[in-house]
Length: 301
Image (cartoon, rainbow, N blue to C red):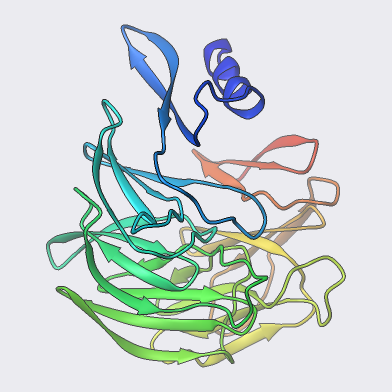
């Protein structure tokens, strides 16, 4: 990371915004130089369960955010060049799930999981196309798994009794294929899909919570459990080709075939101490991971 980017992250993480309202920091690249802009969010906000955490998505000329604003500003769209409002929608609070875009049947969609529902919107202006109710039964909860787009279907998952749902998108509407709390309830980490099956961490992953979360594989089109590894605990999963790279909260990296017949690790190594919650990244055969106070890079052959 070069010095300009280090200074940028230091600035947005530790310095107070110059504006009095909530602000959206932006990094502008111009003539090889970088500078920070503060774009004010002129809308009253609901209080988040844990903390304020704006989830942004850049699509073309739009910056789309789940801000959980009141007065129809749950999701807002800004012009990425000048910060001007392009539109707003939703009266719901924000969740902790990142928004995604996808092209389905030749049409572009922006998908947001708010506190109470899935919202499909026009990427250009945030205009709502359809909604699907999906939320935990209790207010003191966290929905953090990103909506997973598989062809013309969207998989949703959350803990606290929400469970999972598979939807089929058709134009300005969606149809529920199945929904169950006896399938795959992802607390924080987003499951991965391979060859008609989903792999993920099922259950609450709060420290000390009983029973511990399991690692499981379910059939995409039915939600039926193919296999389950009990008491696995918190972990994140990356799909690399036809293999799973699983990093546990205890700092152990496991490598296993993405197979519906069972969990059979082919390699494992302790690469970090405990308290590993951040999602890892894989690029050019290099696996990047961090714990609370340590960052490592591991070569994956």
